[in-house]
Each structure stands twice: as C-alpha cells, then as structure tokens.
Image (cartoon, rainbow, N blue to C red; front, side, top):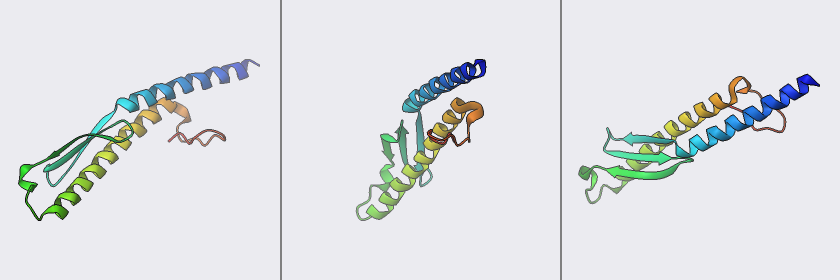
Length: 109
C-alpha cells in the first residue's frame, strides 16, 4: 500500500509540474526571421503572432510574391523555435517519465 501511495504522490507532483509548464508555455515567446532579417515575426504561447516587422526595402509594388514567401519563411522559423522551447519545457516537467507511452495519457515528449 505504501508503494501505491508513493506512486500516487509522484503522479500528482508530475501533474502539477505539467500544469506549471503549460502556464509557462502560454507566456513563451520566440522570434523567427527570413531574408537576412528583412522580415521577422514574433510568436507567443501556442503560436499567436504578436509582431511582424518588414523592412521598407521590401515594400516595392509588384514584389508581392517575394514578400509573401519571406513572411511564410519567417513564420515557419519562429514556429520551429517556439515548438522547441515548448517541447523542452514539457520534457523538464515530465522528468524521468519523458518519452514514456502510458496508456490513457498523452505521450510525454
């Protein structure tokens, strides 16, 4: 019975760590850029765009495709960085259970 109580306490501690990590993830920010910094995008939390910066040199009529491509690339870069930070937060929270596939629970990175 002691083992079961200890296991339950560990599960509750891990659940609290995961909730704390999710709260930190909501405040996590990342920035991505493209075109050597001509376009940059900042993301927060689950991927909400908080800022877009476009260099004035890109504001040329007829160059819409280039600008669109750079915005997409900057967003992809920012999302990749944000996902990496969030994954690390979840790995830290999961501790020794990271990577385990426990039935009924989401896979913990």
